Image 1 (tube, helix red, strand yellow):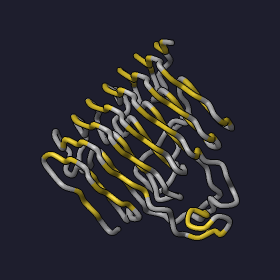
Image 2 (cartoon, rainbow, N blue to C red):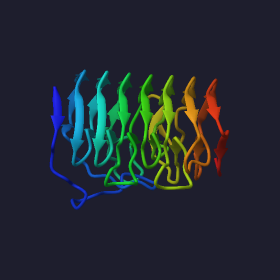
Image 3 (spheres, rainbow, N blue to C red):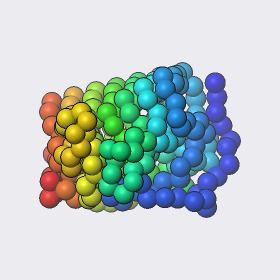
Image 4 (cartoon, rainbow, N blue to C red):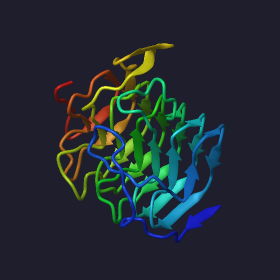
Length: 239
């Protein structure tokens, strides 16, 4: 299928999903909420006025594979959950076990510069594997907060990012506020999160990017290994 020519949403409502810098429009060309086992594959998303795919609140085992996203006003794929303040344990309203694999994503953020092809916000156990992402205004992949964790970013090729902003990297993370979850021990809420894993990515730190992997503002519980990073290393700030 070809998805194209949707209405612009840059003057619509945006909300702050957590402790990171992002605000998001909780909508998209494909909008999913309260779903399980949805597969989105082999589609073209082009010339869209907003986000491509929006996974809002509870979405289990969604697969987004083998698609192309190009010329989008906002982000390609957003995962945005909800909590009751810091309580993400009693409120299980988050995307979980989502697979984003083998997609080609480029020329996004045409209108919204504080956007990324893949946004992970208040979500659990996201896998971003084997994607090609380039020509974007800010991060290619942004983990907006420290809720739950257990994300995997691997075998992605990222370049030509942070072209229209600064103080950022192709892979960016934030963690400015605590969240309760049972990430460490099932059924036992705590402020600890599960480790996330960033490995075997090829990352070019060109344009205005400062660090290929930018763990900013308290980011912790990351294991970074076997990445090929050109023109830079990584940053850990207050994490």
